[in-house]
Image 1 (cartoon, helix red, strand yellow):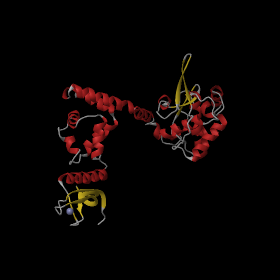
Image 2: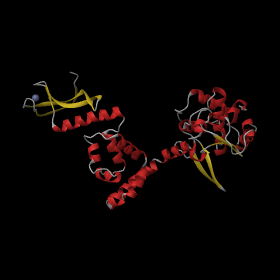
Image 3: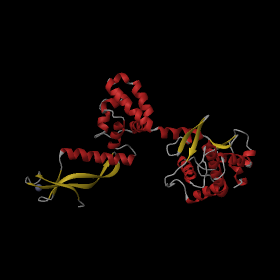
Image 4: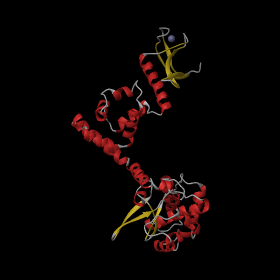
Length: 342
Ligand SMILES: [Zn+2]
């Protein structure tokens, strides 16, 4: 018997009825729950005198949860602790959460112990964890079902959660702008939108000492050059961003939101008549989302245009066939990449 000792404690042993050091051991158990075979770790007491294992009621409950959690994992459902974490995120009590969701008063308490939640309820709990805006909306709808102290407390917690989730809402908003473009290879350079790559391309440029005065207009051009040079070399772009032809050259769809993403090193500088956005990354960094090949492509872009002023890069872009052949405000086709000046 494979026996893992968790701890030992001197106490009355209920197997031999003597006081001695009783071991708590973990055993791997196999079981079948709702037709699904599962393995999980169960905990027991072990007596060295009788060589017997035994348990108490608390242990049985714990082992039952361990078994059901193994089943939940196998079925892709939230585990007991994950359900508790959803509730803790908003600091809400079991019964108030039930009231909020219009579920029977003991539902959550049961899910946090012996009962496995159904798929529909699981989906709702997951959505709740990811969508504090929805939680706030539910709170307002069910205000009458909650005490005013509880209501205020939950609103505060959900607001904090909502603020923290800003980045994921922003990413969703950008993704929504690309919903249609995802299937338009001529505009996304045959690459699926990958915001982690887009962020790392920006960070890569922003960290290079060979890139001078990286402000927004210049950054937008450099993103376009990176994707187009990649497409020219290997038939697919890096970021999956699609670019529109604007008077100052190519600009990615969703650019205003992209520069607001949390990991983009963007600094707002107040100028006389507005705000300038400067991109600079001074701390040593890794660019985990980029491949070596992609970094080499970006290095080529940096070598050619990194030292240009904004005005110079805009003029340079205006010489591109891609720009000359695209109507203002239209999306720029990646087919022109083969005529790229780089
Ligand atoms: Zn004993």
